[in-house]
Image (cartoon, rainbow, N blue to C red):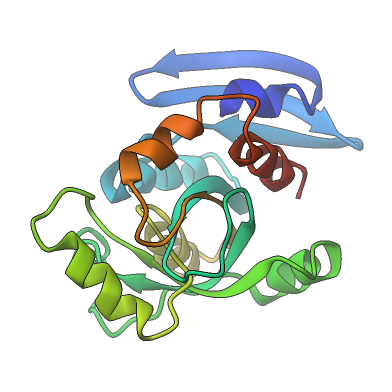
Length: 205
């Protein structure tokens, strides 16, 4: 995704590429932007956030993907997380499970003004796809109107609150609810699909 984002920026410069962390800088409408991949899941995301805040970054916006947890959400549609269920293990090492995972309100407001037809609501962050009862777990949370599932948003929101930085998670839906996970993830690498258009839409937002 870093290479795709690079196409939207000017004056780009490659910084580093080590393990799951690939970073570049560039400009968009005169604003300098740092782009970095965070790997998969809470631990690698937390490492990135910790080190970004250490160098003075004050706003972090995740541009990622999710699987829908409601039947009406189509492939390539944007899901903007207004809060996240902390169904991963890492953030509980930072704060108790009762602590909310929420974004910065003014970034939600800006997103609503730019893409009013996107899906805005609560998402769920988790630690994996292939557990034996994963379908049952997703059905459980779907009944509570959770919009989609990813693996990083709750970590971004919790650490953002703890460190006083602005955060937002913009997610492109790559899997229909109750559809085949492998098919959805594979479609993400096909540049001609509607999923790839959703990725570009999430980057532009």
